Picture 1 (cartoon, rainbow, N blue to C red):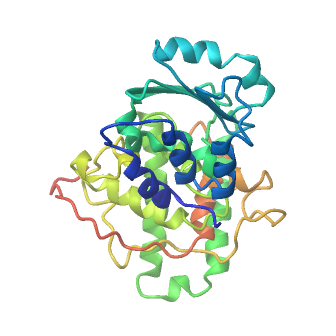
Picture 2 (cartoon, rainbow, N blue to C red):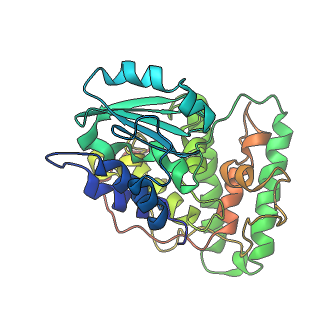
Length: 322
């Protein structure tokens, strides 16, 4: 089965939300929604792959999940379970506890814990994206000089022109390229100045796109459209936390496509802007500010994906400018 992108996962998780009742089948349906093989899920359901201590109330698969149903305090049970021998021994990625009303879960790799009504699983589907191969991007402060950021942006610019030699000769080509870089720079500026939450843009790109970068253009288009949408309820759930940016900087149209490169970030391939690997190359971009070099590679994702589509969503626009 081909890797699922963000939109596909969102659509597959949606039917699990809002049910009147929930039972043990929930965990199997959830794993399938993230692209886990049907054969593996069937064997887990039948007990062949279930390594749980109490298979009557628990479902556990090595390195994937330890799921427990309880009638007690879900958070208290979670705290006990995540350090239990069964979880530690099998390197469980996600520990989930539910009474089928509330659900709490911990990502043992990042240490992040989340809790919500189980009926709202569709609003929190990004938490389990590592099951689909989309790791959560986490960054620490960098001390690289700003000149490194400028060098990264220069490399990205050169890569785009190398892959699109006629870009500047095309009608609107120079405008599209300039607008693309302007949008990137605004997003990093917004992270530094509090317009966005810290690392909000960088982590979103790193956490919500596939390693090969094939869906990055679509993701950026959706993100730019969300930034141009005033009403948060009109945005995709995973982008609703991004603020509305007036002034029409992020208005998508047919002549605001993203320049692209046919190169793909596959295993053992050369990285156009970094030698640190596909993940950092996709998730970072040059930040012309205090956190620079490590971030610089995210913008390269746009240089390795097909041309951005124009979103069909339209929102109310403000006539004011920033």
